[in-house]
Structure formats: C-alpha cells, structure tokens
Amino acid sequence: MKKIFTFATVALMASAAWAGVITLDMNKPINPAVIEYGANNVWTECYNDVDYTWLEFGDENGEFMLSHLIDGEGASWGGYYWDGFTPAIGGDQTDYGQAGSSAGWTTMFGGCMAGGGCVINADGTVTADPAQPYLVAYYSNWAMEGPSNQVMFVDKEGKTTFEPVGVYVCNHPWPYYGCEHGDGLGEPFGEGDYFELIAHGVAADGSETTVSINLVEFTDGELKALNDWTFFDLSGLGEVESVYFTMNSTDVGDYGMNTAAYFCMDKFQVKGEEGTEPTELTAAPTFNGYTEDGIHAYFVEIIPTEPSTIYYRIIYPDGTVSDWAVYEDILSFTGEGLYRVEAYAIAPGKLQSYQIAYECYVSPVVGIDEMNADKAVAGVRYFNMAGQEMQQAEGLTIVVTTYTDGTTSAVKVMK
Image 1 (cartoon, helix red, strand yellow):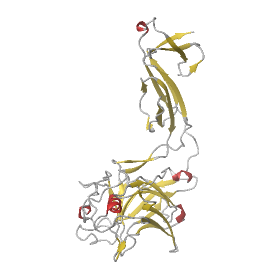
Image 2 (cartoon, rainbow, N blue to C red; image 1 turned 135 degrees about the vertical axis):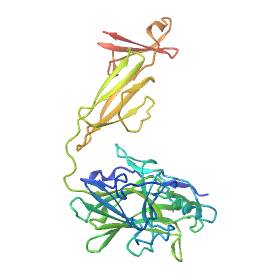
Image 3 (tube, rainbow, N blue to C red; image 1 turned 120 degrees about the vertical axis):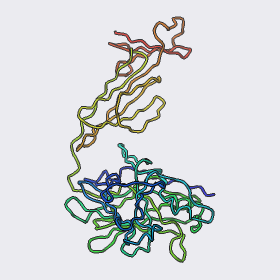
Image 4 (cartoon, one colour; image 1 turned 180 degrees about the horizontal axis):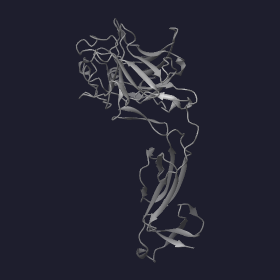
C-alpha cells in the first residue's frame, strides 16, 4: 500500500497583511437561522431543495452567500442528490469505502481529514476542532443554473464586488482514501497523478481569473495529501463579483473525473474597508509571582491592565513549549527547574499588546528541619523573588542548595 504523507504546509495567518479582513464564520448563520446536524454529522436540511438554494452567513460587516442545490426545487431528486456546499461537524476521518464499491459514502459524506473545523489560534497557527463546523463541498459539472460551488459577498453598504484574500481547505475522506487505494470508480494514484482544486474569479465584465492548489499529488514515489487546514491564497483573483470552484484529476473516464469530487472548506476571507484595521496597541499585562510558604510551590498571576483577553504559554525546564491558551486563573508550578511564562493581551478594537515574559525558578524541597547537616554540598544557587538567579544573596533571597546525593533544599533568607 502506498503511504500518504501530509503536505508540510505552514498554515500561518496569511491574511494578517491585509487591512480589515472579513472572515466567513460558520457560527453566524442567516439562512438557515439555525443549523442542526444529524447522526451522520451533516446538516439535517441538506436535501431541502425548496428553502435552501443558497446558504447565507454574516454579521454587521457583510454577508457571505454560498450555493447549495443551485438548480433549485427538485434538484435533490427526492433526497438522493446534492451539490454545492453543505455544513458539517465532527471531522470524521473514517474510510466508508468497500472493495470495489463507493456505496458506503452516499450517506456518510460529512467527514474532514483535518479532524474538525478550522481554528485560527492567537499566535496565527491553525488547528482543527471537532466541535466547530465547516463546509463540505461537492463539485458537479452537470449544474445548469450556475457553478455548483459558488461564493459571493455583499458588504454592509450593499456593494457586491469584493476582493478575495484566501480560504482554508483540506481533503475530504472520500477522495483521500480513493487516491490511496481506489474506491470502486477511481483508481489508486501513481507517479505523476494529481487531484487539483481550481478557484475562478468572475469580474463585473464577465472576465475570469484562476488560481489552483493540489489537494493530492503523487511525486517522487510518494502520495502526498493536503490533510490539515491549509491557506489557499485567492488574492490573485483580483476584484470579482463571485468566486466558484472546479476540480481536476488525472484519473478521468468517459464521463469526467473518476476521483470523488469533494473537498472541505472553512474561513473564506475577503478584503474589508481600508483603514478598518486598528492601530492602537492593547496595554500589556503584568506578572505577579509569589511562593507558598517561600519554599514548596511557585505561583504566577498574570494581571491585565485593561479589559482584555490574555493569552499565555509556558516553556518548561525540559524545553517543551505549551500551546497558547486563554489565561483564566493563577498558574501553579511544583516541578523543579526554571520556568518561562510568556503572555500578551488583546482588547476589543485594538491590536495585541507587546509580548512579555516572566522567569521563575521552582524547587520542590524538604523543609528546613528535615535537612541533614551531614550531607555533602555540591553547589549553592541564589534567586530573587522574581525567580532571577543572582551571584550572591542580596535582600530577600531563596537559597537553593544541591547535595551530592542529588537532593536539594531551599530556604528564604534576608540579607
């Protein structure tokens, strides 16, 4: 069996260079007003071809419209067919194919190889969350009323032209597994094969521009697949009235592509008004570090200087680094060693603050009355109450003594 490798694409917040980026938020539906999901993790109204030709999401910045069953009433053929975009949740990565058959996919099409909806973290990295919704897209070249996978945007002033910035995409499980070992119609990929997603920008005069990205490709003996949320740069499309997506594969037959024409999409971004990007920095938080009884534990409190959300991460003594997280309570450290806490704050309508850092040395030690005077001392270190090491005791100092048997002790002294 050929091994599939995930493309090593760095999914940074590519939109950060644009002023006033507006992002499609699946948690802000307009039509339908509420999205419910069935046992297969797909929107329960997926086959409603009367009320939902288009899906709509948005807020005070504008409204995104995405095609769904674009051929209108009767297009679902009594609940057996859909095209365009449909909401899903959960990020199912199961292979529902069977030897020589794709029948298992007909109801279980709500998966996503990233493992859940796209989340853009505070540090700009991208992860997946199974609790967050995303869009499953099915490309049909048989749609008669327009492109099956079409996106439009209307801003708060009613302007219908927009500048796409980008969108996050990843593979759907059906083509992922089909390209690996076949699915009854599609063949396993070999050297030189690829599965491509193409974005078309349609300008007001009807002219088109395109950009593309490979979802799967077989090169240098390896089958590589885009299975994490990856930023697809759409800025090259320019100012458009709509964007639609098509797909292309090297595996084709008499009726078109044999590769299953699905992909997953989230966080479609368009350029907003110039000057809407904030310019004022959030005030940086401050640290307050303190010990419990001066010896046995060390605590760090991160104090905001204005109403804001604080993000922090910890660099542990062994060098490992935690993910960025929202600060909610004091941080407690009991493992021995030098800890580094980094933090910044973001207030509404402002840019994030400068990142600040705090270092503290923690030594889980025995009490003074348990120290053995007969032990040989291997070394002595001095730390102030901020956890900074000093050459000698000065003022209120934590004296950490290491013995030749590997044990340590610490006392708080005033010099």
